[in-house]
Image (cartoon, rainbow, N blue to C red; front, side, top):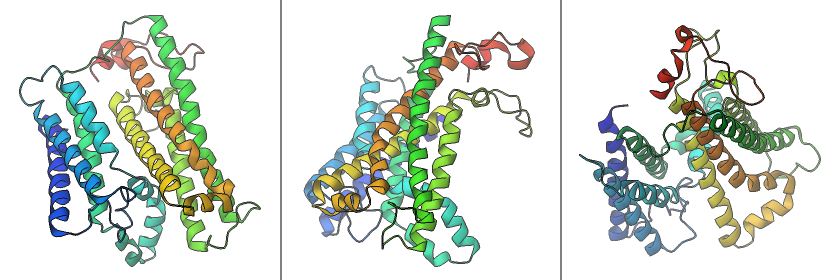
Length: 347
């Protein structure tokens, strides 16, 4: 991705966020992130309209300031500025993007069957705005790395560093795998009508979509295994063209951190529903507790996935590839196979 695009993303997100918030306030229309009529526009609904507008403007300014702070020579406090902008903007998100990603298999089935009208719900400005916010946050992260602000760059190449990072990656990745698998199991049990997973509102459409979500969760769990498995560092030999090559560090770390952020945003939404949505959310959990309780694991899932991804990155930068050793340290590989640790440090 070109360096200029790293900064273009937060600028576009900041401008879109500011214009939409101010425009909604001046026109008297609902804020795109607090619009009851839009399925994807309810992330800030429990809060008063003025608070939502102020929050959007602050987040927009944060994205813009964070982007322009890295133009030319980066300022000393740019890391703090970008971190504050990232958190402020991320708190505007809810579970919308995560839902869209989870329902993609179901959406593909609808498209194949010609039921395109069912996908019209995706034509939402609120959803587009949330996607822009996510893109802006990713742009800030990539820009920080591109412009040489790498305080957490390669640690000392010692056996202790690699052992510690490998152990942490495995431990937290296993936690991050357990949560989506538990969620997937509940959706499969809903589909088969198992005792404790039945409800009059669980129609065939709901359970079919649930199976799609289960499939997406299982895929995510399998990919998380790559944070401590050999194939997460070298593409399997059977993969055409790239088989046997080293997996770029960011190809594993960036998606994992994005998913971790989206899961945390969804967790925030669930918590706000329980706290502010009177008794509806609590009643839903009480009616079918085995279906709703796995959502409470999502904050743990988010934090564990982020820690596992950062530990994976740290161990990769420390050198050595995972070869199934208990201590997570591989024997040195021939230079021809991987070009040594120097090639990894440049990834």
